Image (cartoon, rainbow, N blue to C red; front, side, top):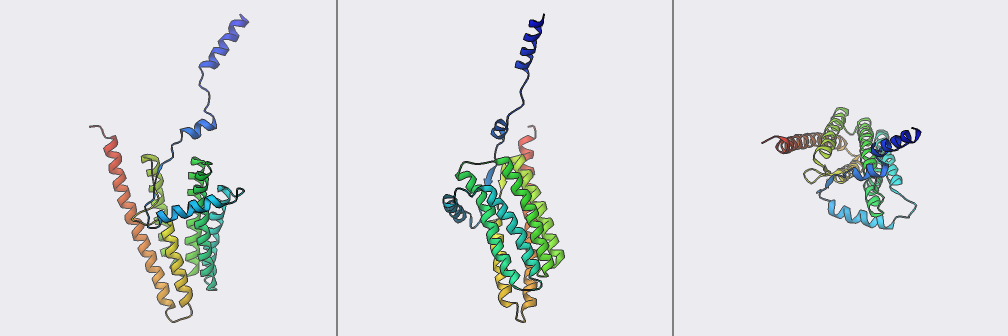
Length: 247
């Protein structure tokens, strides 16, 4: 009788599905197709590949992710500092460049070294982007360079567009990284150029005009992101409707 009970237990274990291992979970996760067609995309890919091939072996993707996160926090702090001293504008430009280096290179380095962690990378990168946007817009609002209401509007538009991108990534398997030839790198470049222009003219009578230029740029950014949000939502809704509506 005891032998029969043992055999029954073995049989039950054999037919009961085992929980998937970590490797199986990672293998079952399908990374989305990246769509990056910004003005600088091709040059950026070549530059990032060059850096990734030459980084010391002790530098890994987590180091670069942390660099990108810290740099965006410091960029926001530098904008806040610019309220009392114009050198904050140059510091913000430096930290935007460091943010580009860390934020853009971490994924490239992982792919070059075949150390991809798609679920971890997708989640962590975009949570960091969310906090980074908060730091950046908060610093701009404190600086007085941009009216705080416009800075808040930019952050809200950024969050809404991000939600659309993440949902489309899950539902359609396409990760849209640029819109109308503009991506994160182009935005950093425009901010850096604005910082330098304002730094150069901050002691002249056109300071007020420079502030208005930043406000106008912020309004243009809000309108642009809103249009991208609407167009993408309509397009993706239509795609999903056609693919899942019975004929």
